[in-house]
Image 1 (cartoon, helix red, strand yellow):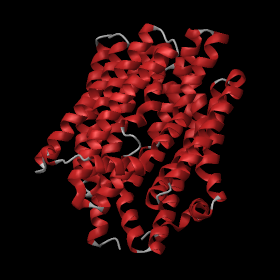
Image 2: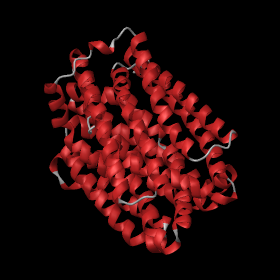
Image 3: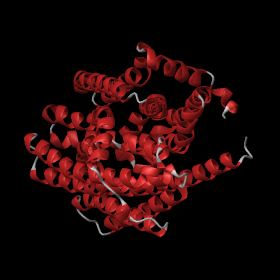
Image 4: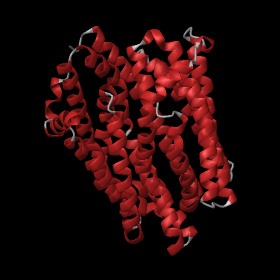
Length: 439
């Protein structure tokens, strides 16, 4: 198997995606350390509060169609121009709607003028999110090299800009502009890479028929995306909103700052499962069309890979989190290290949840994902309201852990179509040493 042309092709694709994520992880980690040390807990809390609000609404910029676009570019390459043109139209309109929604939310929430400016600068970057359509095109053709080069170039420029801001002792607002700059650069470079491969945006053929098809297929994923982002990001918003009364806005911003540093480290740990899911998605999609048995073997083995990654990342993280964070960010962020140790427990459901996306997409279980994600989001929000007043950030972590256990894992046990996935997830986690049976 390891010498076959197909395996070698996927190995090269994975290698480029791996190199991309590792390099970007290093750049993000280095710049985050310098930026966080420079801004301090309070200002980094303000910046991440703004980013959290935009992140929750980010799914609007795609209207939930990302997974459907990626799937159909593999299944129907002959329709690529119509698919990509319609996806571009959806994403551009979605970016405009996102900015309107975020502005209205900020006004209703009565944020101060400076925070409103931070939010709207970061939200404006979503107007350029349409360029991800080009990345999905390259990934569907197992051309990870091209998308990796685009990502690396944009990451290098973004990191350089942030480090210059630290050197120049720039005000907080310029770090919000950095988020916008990265997305603009990514869009321009993606377009140029697409042209250099002999493709032309002018050949895209947006149609209302295809747009309606994509939205009809993906509307559950739109709500699912909101619910999932709520599980991931609402805690940073709620920590500030709940604690600003009892402890004051300054202390609440510091609490968000400490929590956000721990969250960033956890998000950095997710780069490997994301790479694996992206690299294996085309092979799993093709297996679903050819042989159900092979398809289920590949999905199960993907869960095995995810659990192995969890074991090798969470155990060191649990014991080394506090000294690591203190060494990287300074004594001011020792609390973030203590939070990160607790976060290590949650990683298993984060990794399995990433892998589960392949099953959901190929089985067309978007409505089921919608229901479970909404349930998970509701559980998370309720537990946040109950736990944050007394446990502060620790309460937010445990609220997220419990909600992910229910939505990612336990919920699959209760419907006939997903029970097979519950068995595959369980088998993958409890027979992870059988990873050698990958096909």
